Image 1 (spheres, one colour):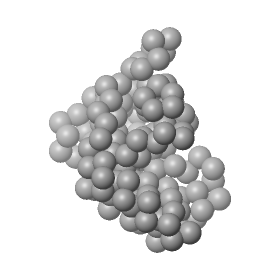
Image 2 (image 1 turned 30 degrees about the horizontal axis):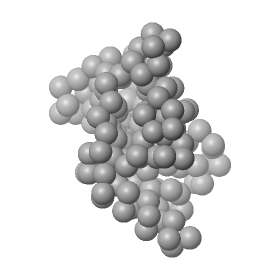
Image 3 (image 1 turned 120 degrees about the horizontal axis):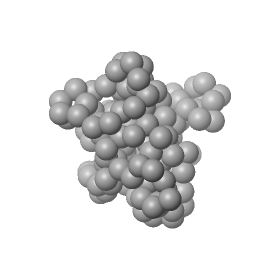
Image 4 (image 1 turned 45 degrees about the horizontal axis):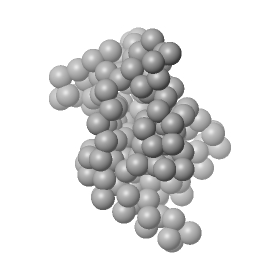
Length: 143
């Protein structure tokens, strides 16, 4: 999670909401993809940290299936990012701060554990939650 927090700091430098994400290999030792929000920098509404990290990990491993991998993100994924995690077949999602307004991994919705889908990653929430929430709070207070 500390690596994801470092990515979140990079988002702030680019004027974006401080969300960072990494994708870890199946043994948890190798970062396959790392990213931060880049919506403001790119003008791309899909440039969320999770989507970018998943894309980079898939490119690195040479396939879209990220079975065995872990997505680590500072903020609970939104519906788009939760969908990307499910479709990429990551085994688990680890996130820090809950997102009561747009979270789709248990808060507002629970896309990742929807029984109608063919893949349901494990969800681990609250890892360094206070640190993750503090970065978001500081960003929005400054605005």
